[in-house]
Length: 416
Length: 165
Ligand code: SF4
Image (tube, each protein chain N blue to C red):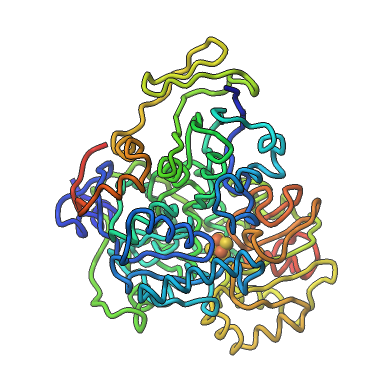
């Protein structure tokens, strides 16, 4: 019987046949820590008797959630982490590089066939390169920092085959919101979701990242796309590696197979307070909004801002909404800046911030008051996620966010 | 011991909102547990109280602050129909035991509960509910008083050894 791509990655790392359901102590190729989960991971590393980390070059450290430090407590955490990086010889990207997941991808810290862990749930995004990547807690991360390995229960895979061509102004975010609505918030718990089919093959890396990023919103341990020429092209200049073939065998055993056709897919909006509450935009069109956020590790890339700018054209954003735009990394910021889009957004009335998580998780700035409504291109709309527990968060694509920013209410991007 | 009853999809933002994540002390975190969603919890929860919930408890972020906040409030066991994966692991790693129970819908908030985890059951108001056994490798960690204790015993780790669950 054949193997899934996930089983092949674990087998390759361990040098023996590993199947879904096996529990293995597998070596990890990379480990990411950021300003929120890092301090506790470091503390756990010391509590475990750690002295030197397993390999400083394989640890990716950066600050993105609360930057520049928005409280004295946050500043103290940053100092603690900087000191650890200096002592251990870990390269620290610090506050200037961007959102953790985007930085890991851009700097080539995840590649096909690798096992990468991060002390953050959206670590599953690196599956877009054909790596097995999963989010872990701080104690698990303390263990990884010390030993460079971790226990994994190798997951069964759900095969999500996507075919068809998107309508104009419909894309990867609409697709993943519709898949989340279909699979449900816990429909893929403990499983890996393997995205395949023509639509995925034709998606650029930005779109693949958007899909894999949100695998956790269905409870999945990982999202993954088999590497192809798009993947290897993306890795050029980021990672020295000779391309190789890595994909699931035709007779691999899947937990479940699902297929999707995007030909008639409409722009999707996830309604409060769960990611799996997605509906076609028409169902909520006209909903009043107070704040719009275009950014995050899900949709803060140059491609996303291009999509938003195309919808915007030469118009202005409505003065009824606050529009906050945050590129997910320095690279994405520079690309957007050089293309003239930052000027365009600022002229249209947006507040553009430096790369960070921003209002995505309600930990720093851009918080919502009770009763306020936010429309966001990020990945979570839980109660209280962006501030007050009495606020409402809707999720959508950059195109829908831009269209809604023009009118001041939730709007179908095909109609502006 | 009293039951604190919650519904489905209780996420980590509800358990401990993002603005408290600069705190790492479990007692301090406990003061903000369920802040804004269930304010009586942090005031009234007592040592040994049990959280009972529906499906997908602990979904969302990987923040270990969530199980720590509950542990700080005195909770030792969480009984739910299912758990989100990262929360499940984090809970065990910090010494909280997540117990899976097929149907918790009949268990009411404020009831008294006795947990017999080794016997695979919980008893609520005299009625027994079966719970699933905790996987062996997880028990190994719990028996070492969490992952920290387990890691301390190890000189070298058994890389690439495998076992079936
Ligand atoms: S942008 Fe949002 S989802 Fe992404 S890492 Fe930051 S807080 Fe998490």
